[in-house]
Length: 304
Ligand code: C5P
Image 1 (tube, rainbow, N blue to C red):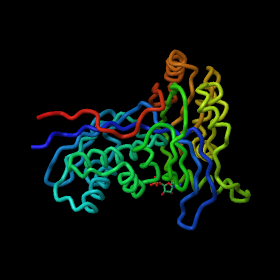
Image 2 (tube, helix red, strand yellow):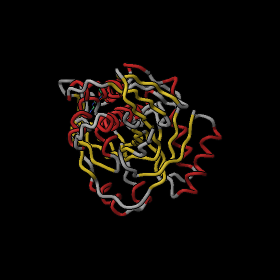
Image 3 (cartoon, rainbow, N blue to C red):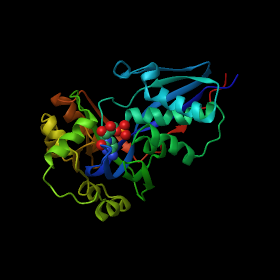
Image 4 (cartoon, rainbow, N blue to C red):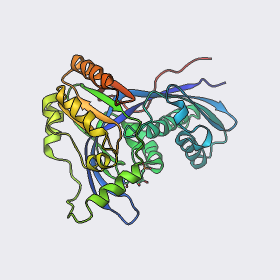
C-alpha cells in the first residue's frame, strides 16, 4: 500500500495590488506583488476509492467539506484530465484564517494538486501543475509557487521577484464577511468615472524588495482594493490606524480583505503589535508570520 503524502502550503498577502477596469468576462486585469507568509495549511492525502475531503483545525467549521471544497475540485480536475481511476482521501488541517484576503482556499487547491500528483505518481512538472492551478482560481498558481512574485493577467501569470531578507508581518483577521466579487464591484462603482491607467507594479517596490530593508518596503506597499474594502467594512479603518500608531511600517488590507496585514520592524516589534491589536479586541485573530516562504510542497513522507 502506498504511503500517505503530506503537503504544506502557505497563506499569501499582496504587497502591491493595482487593479484595472472590468473586462467583458467580469474579471479585472491586475498587476500585483504576491508574498507567501508562514501561516500554513497541511494536507494529507491517502489512496481511496473516491475523492473525499475532510477539514480539521480551528477554522474547520467555516470551510465546506466533501465535494464542495476547492481541494476536491482540484483532485477531480487532475484525475479526470490525467485519466486516474484511483481516488484520494484528503485531510486538510487548517491554520490559515478563513476570513479572506489570505488565499486559504487557493492554498488548499494548490496543496491538493501537489499531494495528488505525488500520491498518484503522475510525475507532473511545476509548470504542468501551474496550468491546472490557473483553472481553479486566480491565486492558486501563486500558492503553488510561493516566495515573492509579480502576478499579472488575473493574477495567474507569475514572475518570481528578486528579494532579500526575511520580513515580519502581523495579520489581523476580523469577522466581517467581505466577498471578493462584491469588493471588486464596489471598486468599479467608486471608480466609475475615472480614467484608469493600465495596472502596473512600480519600480520602487521592486527596489525595496531587493534592498531587504523593512523601512523601504513599508513605504512602497499599496492596494487599490483597500478603498473599496474600507467603504464596505468601515470598522477596519480604526484597526489600521492603531497598528500605524504603534509603529507598523505599513498597514494595509490584504487582497480584497477583510484581513489586514502590518509590516513590523522585526520579530520583537511584531510580537508587540500582536499584543496591542489583540488587546483592543476588534480582531477575531491576530497572528505573527514571516515571509517570504516556499509554496506548496511535500514535507513528510510517512511510512506505514
Ligand atoms: O479567480 P477567483 O475564483 O479567485 O476569483 C474570485 C472572484 O474575484 C471572481 O469571480 C471575480 O469576481 C473576482 N476577480 C476579478 N478579477 C480578478 C480576480 C478575481 O474580478 N483578476
